[in-house]
Image (cartoon, rainbow, N blue to C red):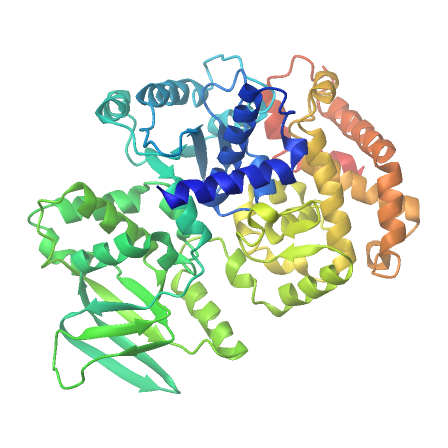
Length: 562
């Protein structure tokens, strides 16, 4: 018996029972299976992206006219590049048999990529996936370059050789399109990834240890074969604090360069000099000081905080090339021993992690979770009857409508009270980095909750077919709609934003719940008026890519402020 299959099956049944509004009624055995398959897709998306299941549900695109894509996640833009994660999911109900991911499903995904990412090709799509595709095509038309990661989900084994042949025949650029298998075992590992890791690592040659200010630092060499075995045992659990972890989702140019060096017989021996190395954190390490070199380290609470791309690529290359000898190929190791017992040490850990990853825009959400402001918001929101999820994955499958992931809070605040809807949507990755202070400065628990309630209402309406058929902007305008709704609720209460506190929270919330339909309609009228001024010819026949781009620019914001 595969216990992980049963754990995941239990988990997806709980999601279906806890969130019935996401599924159709189980009127037949076939419908029940469809609902469980959808629940598995939601859990898989949440696990891969390490997001709350509510956010994962928003990524679902499956249904008739989905072009073989069951789910889609679009990252924010950085330096004229953006990442798109595609999901195709297959759930098998016989838990005692190991099924391979179907090869024909891979062919369908391959064919879809060739169509969906080409702005010149027409395709019939359902209302869930169409706005996402138009957004992607709009970005491509504006010169942005997509990196596509296809995640093939199932509760069984990887695809067979025919699937590999379909991928090879597509001839996609390897640094731009990649395929990965993710199954029930990976989901189970991710759910248990908070356990501390205690390990032993063998070093090569001489190493240096220096003690200062009650901390210790080790600098040495470790073979890539040792790193590969370490990653095989623990996987992404080692990368919990690595704030570039999301880069593991795509085979970018850096990963390709690492792979090329490791597989080049002449350059492999000099890998140590070409790579920036790996930085690790721990709470304690020990070794036999009587030995002058080749130490065996015993490490507690091990985490990789820099070099996530390197270690994941090393694991992949070693796994795919078992006949190549990597024992004499080494990489630089920096190991910092920092106590985890007090707040000052946690702050130091955060500072070290941010500093060692400072060259690339990163997702700092988990690291900001220890920030005093985030901790204060947790308490304030709890007192108002809601739950604030400062770290990824904290909500898991038990998340409710009163659970607020900090990522959703940041987007909600920035698009409403801070009036930056275009940045809230297209610069999500930087909301806990460059824009962090601007997002959360002078925000209290009441303001955060009201912002999220408004944002969620607008996001739900974004998917309603009856609204989309009347107003073409609805799939693209939800962040702008949230901004306008927030202005209208303050106007209705005759207060400024600083007048919204815990004292009048219940009153403002009741006002929103009782009047949100009318407020939304009024905001919709404002958007329509602004679009009429920007496009006097009307938007009925406007290219959807151009309409999508309108909500990425500031000129609509200027029109709304007039």
